[in-house]
Amino acid sequence: MSDYTFAKADNDLFAVYQTIYSQADIEMWFSWEHRLNDTKGCKDCFFLCRGDDKLGGAVISGGAVRNAFLVPPFDDHSLFWRLVIEKAKSLTKKAEIICNGVLAGEVETLRSLGVRVWRPRQIMCRPTDVLPYSLPAGFTLEAPTQADIPEIAKVAYTVNLGSISEEMFGRESLRDVKKEVKKSFAYFAETGTMDQCSVIRDAEKQIVGGCVAGIYPQMPLGFAFIADVFVLPEFRGQGLAGAMLRHALTMAHPKTPLMKLHVLVDNPAANLYHKLGFIPGPVFTDMKYSRKE
Ligand SMILES: CC(C)(COP(=O)(O)OP(=O)(O)OC[C@H]1O[C@@H](n2cnc3c(N)ncnc32)[C@H](O)[C@@H]1OP(=O)(O)O)[C@@H](O)C(=O)NCCC(=O)NCCS
Image (cartoon, rainbow, N blue to C red; front, side):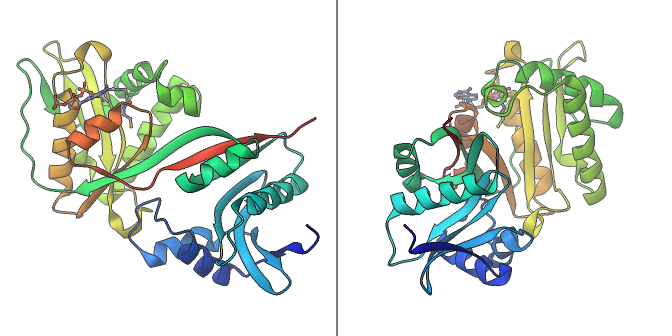
C-alpha cells in the first residue's frame, strides 16, 4: 500500500485527465469546455500515483469524493476506491464520506467496500420543438406571474410531502420552496424565458399544477432546464403534466435546441419524460460510507 501516494494535482492537467478518463458526460453538457471547467475551480484535485505513474484521480474534499477516474492500464477498481476512501477519511473528521456521481460500473465495487447506495440519478434531455397540446375541459394553462409564487410554492410543497424526492433530498420548508421558485423566476426574467413556465388552473381558478422551466444564466451552452413539474394527486393522469412540458418545449424552441432535466432513477416521473421523447444520460449514484467507530 505504501507504494501508492496521492499528489495534489495541477488543476488544468487534472481537468484534462478527468474529462478523458471519466468516460461519461453525466451532466449531458455535450461540451469539452464545460466538462473541463467542472473541476477547474476545485482546490482538492488529487492524482493517485505509484512512483511517477498516474493511476487515477479524484476530487477529495470536505468528506466528499467526486470526478473519480482510473487511468489505463491500471484497472484495480477495488484498490483504487479503498485508497480514495482512506484518503477522504484522513482529510476529514466527518462521520460519513459521500461519493458523488459514481458511475454504474463502479457501484458494485463500492458496495463490496461497505459504501451504500444513496441517490441514483440521471439527466434526461430532448430537442425543443413545436409540440401541440390539449387540455381536458375546465382546465386552463397560463403563464405564472410573481403574484402566483405563494400559491405555486404551496402546491409544489404539498406534492413533495412523502415523495421520493423528499425521501432522498430531505424535507424542504414551504418558505424554502417559495424562495427557490422566486429565485428561478428571477433567473428566467433575466434570460427572458419566463414564458417556458406554466401553471394549470381548474374551473375554480385554483392552481392544481405547475412547471418551473427556463434558461438559467449559468447553464452551459444556454440549454433550457426543467427545474420542477408537479400536479396535485387528485388531478393526475389527465395529461396535465404532459401539456405543461409540451408548452415548455414549444416556448423554448426559438431560443435553444435542447431541454434538460434531472430525475431520480426510481421516480416514476421518468416514465412521463420517456413518453415525451426525453433520453436518459448515464446513471450516476451518490453513495455514503459510514466511518466505523
Ligand atoms: C409526475 C407528475 C407531474 C405527472 O403528472 P400527470 O399530470 O399525472 O402526468 P400526465 O397525465 O401528463 O402523464 C403523461 C404521460 O406520462 C405517464 N406518467 C405520468 N406520471 C406517471 C407515473 N407516476 N408513473 C408512470 N407513468 C406516468 C402517463 O401514463 C402518461 O402517459 P400517456 O400519455 O401514455 O397516458 C405527477 O405524478 C407528480 O406531480 N408527481 C410528483 C412530483 C414529481 O415527481 N415530479 C417530477 C420531478 S422530476
